[in-house]
Image (cartoon, rainbow, N blue to C red; front, side):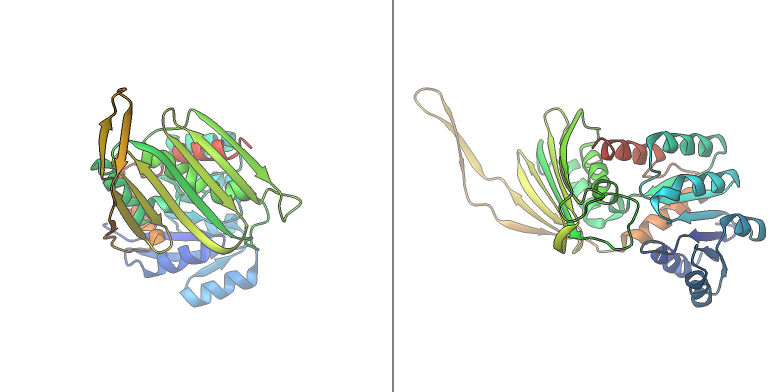
Length: 320
């Protein structure tokens, strides 16, 4: 990169603070400003990371020379802020979801395309090294034909989320990952949403994604007293278990024999299968995501997570 990019972060909540930390650790960028509606929080971050602080993005755009922005504000503000960022001619990484409606997402995608800007969305699990390794396993045909994927994304209610339900906060991750692993979009979507502890928003959901011959089951909730992030995948040649948090994969290769009886009825006899730990080089997914964003700007390449991919996951999540 011939010169360092000047970057800023808007929104200093749970994810925004980690974007700030990562940008501050990356040598090829200058973290020039942070922006948050809470002046005390904004000032604290500015002092800690030696940058300017603002409570209004418009003022920040007027006073600072910026090349790229992360938007980590609440979902309801994504469209409004992202539109301003793009109109300023700045590259943008929007924390998921891309917006609160597909129509707004479409507008942002079109605006960025017209200005030849990089727009990507923080579907962070795409950069989890365990998912990347699982994708390799699938490509190597070690699992054979994929039959089912089952994901569980469970945790207590996050206190900072006030404007989204469990589908937008959690399920959108797994919807995107299932489509990524299978390289296609579902043909049909079914599911149920429940208000188990909350009364104003769904805090529990069970979703079936029908990929025409392959099925994905997504379980998400904010009612489990511990954090669980797992994925299990079954194929004709084997079975794999993945833990997002530990960044671990265990593979079980199918070992069976096929016979037919005197009536020509088929019988499959399974023999014991060894549990095999798959080596995964552990990394921080967010840092990988940010570095990829910066590389796309530098090389003018298409991001791994495009605006359309994020829009498609959002549309499915909003069906319920």
